[in-house]
Length: 64
Image (cartoon, rainbow, N blue to C red; front, top):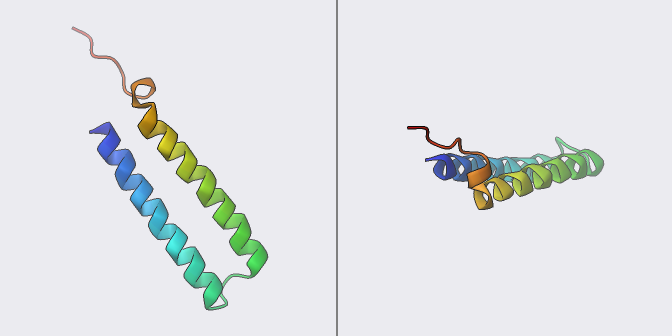
């Protein structure tokens, strides 16, 4: 379940990247602001990928 939720979050982040690109293309964001936000998106994307790869570190162990 944890990995499924992180995959969902990664999908939402990818959608945000599309909106950033559209905002730049239609002149709502200048190039510098777009680059800054796109860099932050990349950082979040890498963190989510890492959480998927190392899910054991983020999921509490079951106690009996």
